[in-house]
Image: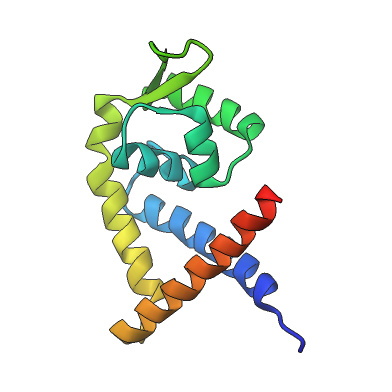
Length: 145
């Protein structure tokens, strides 16, 4: 069987990233870009996590992440602190500036979700997200092997 799911996922990601940046600009949000938004999203869910957690959750290599985190720190979006229990780890914390941006991010995210699922029924959305989670699990398992 010939499939093109991988190509479609890549294309959807590229289009989604471009539209996300466009919507951010339309809303006048210039404090962060789409990639930085993913990092902030993780920290909005749980503040004070190790860099490794951000890397794994966002799917970003630590080498790529280091430069982004330095830029975000200079922008006043986060701060880094050594873990008091394990000095080898660095924990990331949101600043008040970053916390204040959550509503903007949520509005853009809601708009993107509506666009992604336009003309989908609730059952189709649920089923599609289950499929995506299965694909994610498959890929994560492959990374472990």
